[in-house]
Length: 317
Image 1 (cartoon, rainbow, N blue to C red):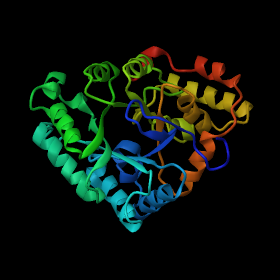
Image 2: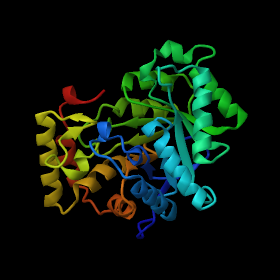
Image 3: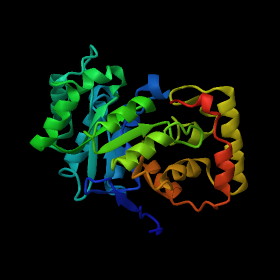
Image 4: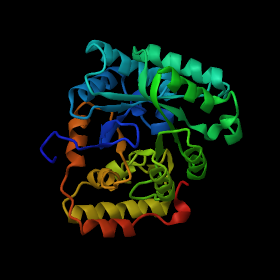
C-alpha cells in the first residue's frame, strides 16, 4: 500500500465503514481569518475541493459552523459539478448551536437541515455533535436534548452514523462513556507537541469507538515551523513550545524528513486512530499531503521526537 497516490484504509470502529488513513478537513476552506490567521479565496477553496474529489482520499470532513456554512456551501457546489459524492466517497459534517448559543433538539434538527441543503444531499454518512463544551453535559444528555435528537436522526436514516467532536479531553471522555456515539473526533491534542488526548483515545478505542485525530499540524506550526507560524491551536504559542518545535524540526532535517511528514505520521502510525484529519487550502496541497503521509521516516527518529513533546503543563487538555 505504498505505491504513489495510494492511501491505506482502516476500519472505522464498529460502523462497518472503511476509511482512508487521512481525511481532508473543511474548516480552513471557510476562511475564518480570526481563527486561522488568514483567509482563503472562495474560488481557491472550490478548486481545492475539486482536487480532493479527483484524488485518492475519498474522505472529507466539514461542519455547519465553519464560516457560517461557507465550507459546506463550497463543498456542495463542487459535489453538484460531479453529480454528487463519487462512489465510496465518505463525507462527514457536524451540527452546531445557534447564534444565541442554543443547542436544543430543535436546533440540532435545523442545523442538519441547513447542512443537507448546502451540501445538496438527502442524508450524510457521518454526523457529529460539534463542540459540546459550550453547553453543560447534563443539558446535552437530558431527555429532549441534542444527543437524544442526534440518535433519533440516525434512527430516521438521515445520518448513517453519529459521533462527537470537541476539545476538552475530560468532557469528551464523558461523552465516550455514554455509549451513544460511534466515532470520536479529537483535535490539537494528539500531536508531536501535545499528548493530552492519549487516555481519551485509549478509552474510546477500548469502548469500540472509531477515533479521528484532527489538526496534526496544531494550526500550522507543525507544518510551517515556528518562524512562519507562531501559534499553536489558534493561540499564541508559549516560548517553550516554540523552542520544542524548532528542535523537532532540526531533528527531522537531520534525517531528511519534512516536519509536516512527521506531524502527519505521528498520528497515522497510531493503530488506535482510524483517520487523521488534515486541512488544506490549495489544490496542489492534496497530492502533497498524500506524499507527506507516505514519506519514509526512519524508526529511530520517533524516540527523539517523543522526547521533544512539550511539558504536560503546556498541553491543551
